[in-house]
Image (tube, rainbow, N blue to C red; front, side):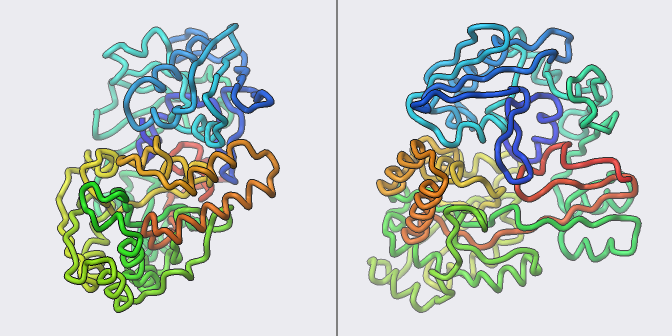
Length: 454
């Protein structure tokens, strides 16, 4: 499981132990309550009573423990999210105990997403569950009406423990790879909710659609993955990474490509959260960028191969031109849509253009800059960041922890560990009877982002 738009499906089929609230903070969900030990290295979860799987079997602590153990030991995008977990035990039917190797400030947030789903221990390894999963979530898959890879039909479980929070009896998810095709499907009535570009939103104004505009909830950036220069030696030099940051006219990109639907940024930390640094460090200055490259020994520039994916398409000409103007020759290598996620996680590319959801500060540090980070395929670490992260993990005072995040955020920007360009807002269009209630502070790819309009 991954945390993209495919989450519309798995969050309907599977419960998670926690959920993220409107402020992006983890709150108990399938786990009714939790408690940490004094040393923050033991997490005890108490499950809700009365939960059942779609096959009628009760949800037990053994099921939770088996699912977490499988995620913890199975290579994949979710395994790093449980890297701090040394063992999982189920001392009774409703209690799950996680023993940690060290305090982990990201664990609860990870358990609110794909790493925290609950599967049926008896069917976890059955081949049949790939197309007919057994979950404890509010919906079950209609296998007869579903066309794998095209349309997924989900029917509500009336025996679900929290059924009142899910007003839709049937929920259909269409897989449409092309943004224009998705917009056409919205206009024709084939779908009644979808994200739209600013220009498309303007076309729908006055029609029978409601446009919901969200505050920025995603970041567009050049992910600098090979920061030790394993594939491209130049990227190991901080001056080169700083030059890459200076190459982009962030305000121009926000106004042009994003049509004002966002704001410039130089960090992956969300605006308003600890760690966020105002975009004032790297002014758009191609001449200064070329000077830095020359100082680093790359006066003649160097070559950089980036993956061409669904999310990079609209930005590729601008990225090519911006980096080309300072001497970096970019080649785009096309990838099929199914390989978009692996463009970063495979370690096949030294850098990549990426759009990702804004996240809580602890997950930003873990996912991008820790040795086990899911968006850090070269396992590159920064000693200052690692030291600050260790302090954050054991600091319970909110003000002190905020100061540590701010220090870490400053290091991230000063060392140019990535080249963020802008934070992006989202516009959702819904037809009569459907209301979009999601916020930019939590994942939007879930059925909980929609309600019946009053």
